[in-house]
Picture 1: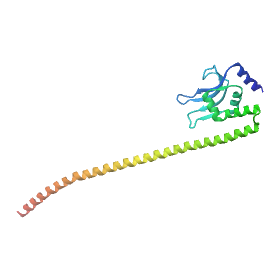
Picture 2: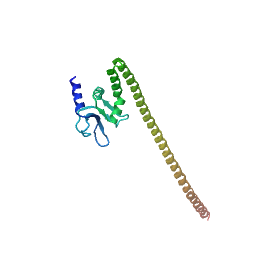
Picture 3: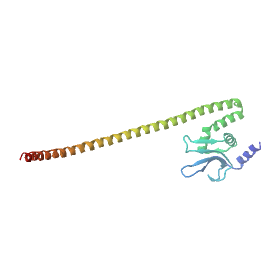
Picture 4: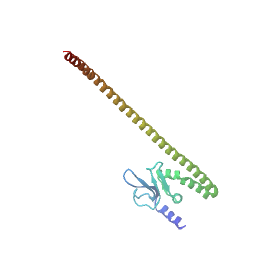
Length: 199
């Protein structure tokens, strides 16, 4: 209860935002999901860190403490557009919607939990399907690249073989007239030798 009172105190004393705070090296940014005063600078002071976001993985890694995020939302914290999309992806906004319905008496807590659990199962199935699809696409691309490289190597070997055959044929063609000349030179010499033997 003391924790809720503390959150309510923040709600009334300042505008609270749930937003991203950047960290990580250049071109490899990782973000913390933080609850901060709206007037604080982007990477400045914050009230609480409730998760992290890594856009460098495929699909992007989103780790958020759903319970704390829900608690801050119920106490009036406003998420930025990016964080709102992340909270929606993780089901926190749906849970908030269901929890407000429970508080108003529109549905029971059991029904709300059942609906949320059904949504979580569907979401996990979709995420698994997407991961499998990405893995399959990577495998297909790898196989395609390997096949292209093999075809390229075979074409290169064929070209080398053809050049070697052409070089051998050219050498043989160049050697044939020389052999003929040598044969023609040998014939008169042989005739001259015979004439000397007769004389």
